[in-house]
Image (cartoon, rainbow, N blue to C red; front, side, top):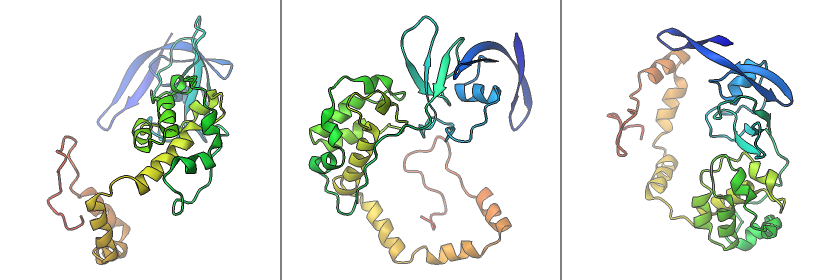
Length: 255
């Protein structure tokens, strides 16, 4: 069986033939086009996303999905907005996981291992089973950054955990019952705020803001009508897709 799907672009409307395949969503069988992602297949099947769809671009981690394939004992994971359906996949979404998230004051928190351990004592219950790394849909070396945190190496932990999208799937598999992604987030915040070298241009920008460089400019924008703002936005000079790192617009008065 094949289905005619309508794909609309700015210029034209194109019909594409797609074969229908069976998948199982939370226990119920559906026939969906084989070219769709899990998220689009669920919408095709009649699901309406109220929560759990997020960015739709593989960034926010809101659509963590667990699935199995026929004849395979492995539990597989992926993001519903990125993973393409395959025949007879049996899936369920995990839009939220009740993981511990500590409360702390960034002004007074110290960038030290003892501070993290005080807020997340379960950190040292890690048995290095590596299930967290295996379940990560972004291939983040979760165990490695947890080990770096335990050694007090916040810089290494920050670098290893940088691609974490906070989906929480690592916490679902953890024998120590910790929320690795929340622990890493605290470490990245402490490192960025109190350990990382402060960039010169950021301090200069703060001084410009405090000195009132943009006050008149913002006041002028706030006085314009909606149509005037739309015109300014559509006529602005946009950064080219293949621009060099040092690209700047011709008009730099707003920088």
